Image 1 (cartoon, one colour):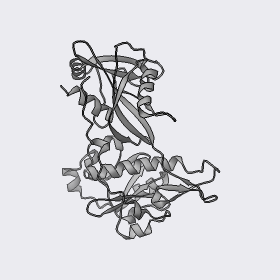
Image 2: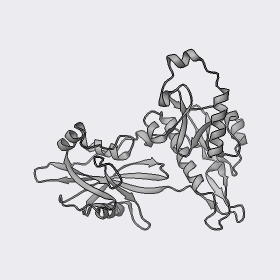
Image 3: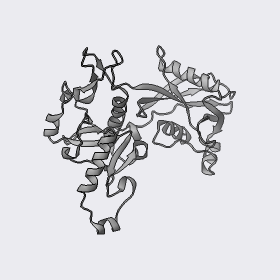
Image 4: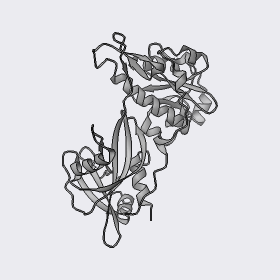
Length: 325
């Protein structure tokens, strides 16, 4: 196969924040950062509060009490941001506060109410829906707070003692108050693979799979988590064989992207398949299909195949190959 270029840092892989780790402090008290003028970014169970084309940015007065607060960093202009991961009660309080504090102008709402991220009023939307609409700074903030919010919700108790833990170091650590043990955010590495076969005439084909939980017309690249004690390259070879019974060779790293759903880092690879033989495992992958570039373009155009979008590295890898010559 012809070598592919590294994927560009688009969508969730974009970066625009200095994480400013030295300003996190040692405990979970962010009062000094709030006093410096830090702005809150709100998250609730993976959804973000947005309005007027971006994240809803307000002042600390809007932040409900007893919520998980995480220092996310500062932008190029020195503005600092604190992510506020709301529990159900916190979201209810914030929604009520917004509803009662807004002074609506009926004329403005009638002429340009907006929808989705462009709504004139703050609305909650999932990160996947926002990824391509946010700028580099805001997509960085969004990935941080969604990933860390997921982690805090899932790790409120010490795995050693079962006792409640509490945030420290600006929300980037949870500590056990009984024994002082520290627990850090986890990121689960997963490989995702562009599998290519090249025939004797030089024609390339890509292998796409339909997950058993998806609609029949939805296809994507094969992927899986890296297991303890293996390299990324071995994970590529193992996962492809487990799901498709295809023995691939020459794994080549092409790029990565955070995928905080809830806490993954997707590591993109290409790999070469020596033959067109395969056997879907039927447990995770229902069907597999080889496509030439022309076949895949035609199938997408007539609606027979739904390919991954550019919000995911799966789509970025696939279209990088599809558009290459």
